[in-house]
Length: 303
Ligand code: NAP
Image (cartoon, rainbow, N blue to C red; front, side, top):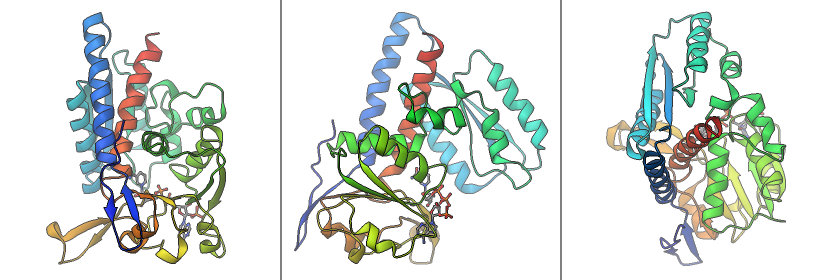
């Protein structure tokens, strides 16, 4: 269980930094224990396949982190790389092969894909019980069923982070800024269905965003616009989860760039009871969820 011991004292208030790296490490340790049990029982070691199309630097970095996480917990993994000139039909055929491969328990197609390939067509082609990103319509829809299957990875990680920091969601006012298929939409459903929260979803067409964000006991922002949420938009004592990860370039940064969230952390944090940093908040939890889903996919297939 996460120990919220990284509290920061400020002039106005004390806030707890929600440490996604620490929680992700705890989850990985739990998975290692389970893998060791599986080995002792002579069961099937989880096997994740990763499909990467093209040579986008950010995608390569995400994939490297996923491979590293598989190695850390003792999963088998397969990397499949294709040039960005691959046709949609050829990629669908490779997906068919992975769907049929009895040794692969879960697999992901790293996004984004080149513009000539339909993301929806590709993700819907993945067999739902191997879809460990939780992108397919069946897994998305299962959020509102009595028996959720493989939950969308980033929202799943956020729900786990709230749980492990003992953040009560029941009857709380949750405001989700951003309504994407990947993050905002599934997260809002999970907060209602699994968290029993009252949820408001804001998006690009929301008028007077601050009128909504100021009502939030729990404010979750997934937009991709650094500095969108300023201190005057946040209620005193709120829990703030910043999903945004935007690469901002500039000579002042080591390596020439920095990863920025959607929240003006410096000025917002003193008003909060808890807040996630960027990086080190939601990002590591997305990978931890991917591992949890791969383990679950293996166990469901072998049940
Ligand atoms: P996305 O598909 O571009 O969706 C962004 C959402 O924000 C859309 O719903 C959009 O509204 C809304 N939006 C745009 N401008 C807005 C504004 N001014 N006010 C309120 N809402 C606005 O992006 P995404 O995939 O959800 O990702 C969002 C951010 O989270 C990105 O920075 C991404 O890199 C990051 N992310 C991080 C992780 C992680 O593991 N840390 C995982 C996934 C995503 P419309 O729908 O009306 O356009």
